[in-house]
Image (tube, rainbow, N blue to C red; front, top):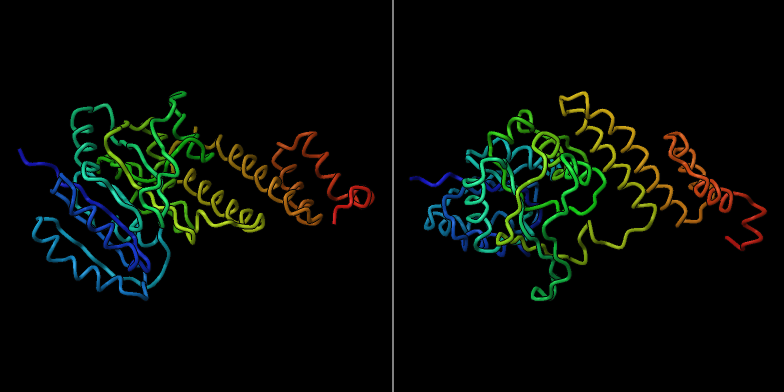
Length: 318
């Protein structure tokens, strides 16, 4: 019996320092009926040269390589383009600066072929230091299940979830990602795919032997030491992505989460505003928090502490 085709969709921007590592991890897969769709998002380095160097290697392994270049438009836009092109019965979307261990695809396909009750699955993820690849800095394993919508809610709140390395049946993917397209906001592309999957299909299956290797880079956008003000902007961006994604889920019952999301992220922004100790910023975000109806007495006390001029002078808050 022919093995089902698995598509790997990958956006890439200026990947010359890590793309070879990613490609090698695909070539080392024990599962070889693969299709790689790589979208070059306007790279200005040697990314395209590296792609061309690997064409013959993919051909020798019988792996299809689909490559397209686009003007820089961001990861979500590049992912949208790639999702229009894949043809596999299964699809996974991966970051080109990471790596998958040899049984990553095989174990997941085997799981979904044997467990018809699942339409998607994930596995263990290990985070390693870019400068010391043998140094494991974190491990993400099986989630604790807490109900039908636990995965969906944890994606919304970014808790107890690793966002990469999922394998999905294309038939289910197309049911929840209409026209194979997501909102092209800044970041959050993984959440936009996982949220509707979680809403309609519940908890994903877990495959312990299928390992995703995540490289933590010093200059990585998601791991840089951001100031509180930058974090506030990132929280705004992510909230907008979540609200857009909820709007696209064609089930009126999901609308109750709009207010939950607004309150939750307003609370996070207020906390970061407190960290700045800037009275005007704190006032702005307290009023936003109050508008959501989730402000507490403790929040009000912090607001007074940092915005009342007399108290600021007494406490020597600059």
